[in-house]
Length: 177
Length: 443
Image (cartoon, rainbow over all chains, first blue to last red; front, side):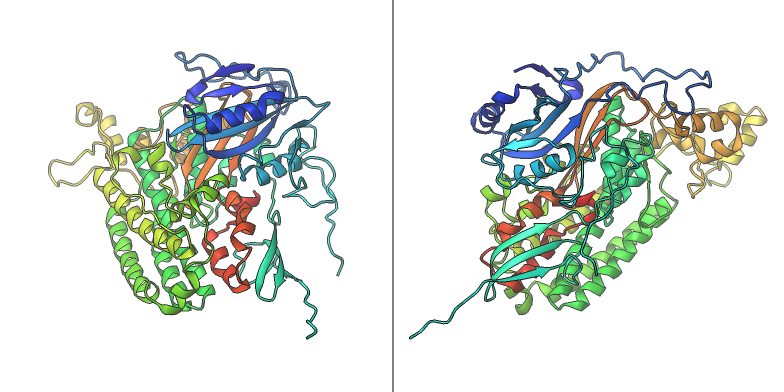
């Protein structure tokens, strides 16, 4: 385990990639957790985190002061990502018997974007992991059929990565009539 | 005797097919009429919602959320706005919460009407479809009266809703609900004991509780299998914890059970709407002592100009909640009193300099809402199941990451399991009960 927090009431745990399967199995089978639902699986690319803040856009040279983010005084600040790794794969679990949610995060390095697949534990992971592969280019070890899901197979790159330009267009490849 | 050679046949259903509610392709491997293997291909309606959300301000995402589930857009609006509110640490006022609940339950009914009507039509019951679309029309008129649009409503705002409910909304709603109940009664007569319908629905598309949970299925589809999970009960948001309603459950988990669950859920949604209309807190309204009529905002301004402050202090005026927006005095009942978040009423934007500045400070590039750094996940009960928004903020005016957990994505992931081993004709009711919404699934 790398870090844990409960910002805004969302219990969050960050674990090392090598202990992901173990942690997920514990969450699923331990009577204290009983997380029988894998509600959501996605990823976040932290490459541009905090860099979009100021200095960009039309307002940059106008001299208009940018307001600080709203601060709620009673709240402790969000601790942020636990490591400097570029990606984080985010799992949201839900326990139906205990009516409890937990968020599990796994840092993934850009040089080796690979984590273990959760398909043996939850069938829902199949499509979710395909989507993360499609959008972020993170591979899942042990996934039965890791291929693109929302984009077409000939698509190049991974569109939700922060270095993929938002206005980039690629030719749509399809059957020629 | 020499046996005949048999070959599996590949049948390509979709992407554009009359029995497909959206654009989706199913490649079925057939042995005679039995489906031996099925591959589901999605993504034909991928519009890059999540990528686009990272490029616009927090308020700018709201119109995109309308297009997620285009049969019940109000629930999407509400889910996104509540996620951002959680990020900001704000709670919308009580009246606003009630309005949101009323609108999302109306949307739930329209969604279920569409789903049941369309899947009945595919089984030949065209009358049912027309009846249900008629009932949906009554409900969409309500939505139109409150929001000004039927589909692309953008009604919720971060911190509140765009406008208060229009005058006479309660009466209109009661009338529309009565009409809907009549339609449901007629449909019940037409379908529930209809031999053709029951034979097609019963025993097809079965899924067990364990499988449904493993596939992450939620909503009416899961409840059809008898699993008691409803976000409104399990982790209540808005004012659902104060309302009385039941969660209908199926037993077998086939298409017929899901039909029953949806029909009963519509009744429960109507119950919720009626309770909300009874309990919704109104602002104090100033009444003219002579005529007994409420006094309009314009008259209040006149009184204020004449120095008759004590007559109007602390009171809320009746304002005109048309497309022009709601008067300032009713604002604090439908939105948070936080100018850095909640857009000013349109009268103010067009009428005075403070309102105009406030408006531009929220909509101009680089000047939107700025939540603190953080991440939240907020689930609401969409018409198809758990609709979750996972929002990450890096402290700038644009969301760093907006992730939608689409309810029908997981159900479509389980579709091969539902189809394999069944007849090709059973695919139609099974796929109908999935209620696939392309906009939400492909984003």
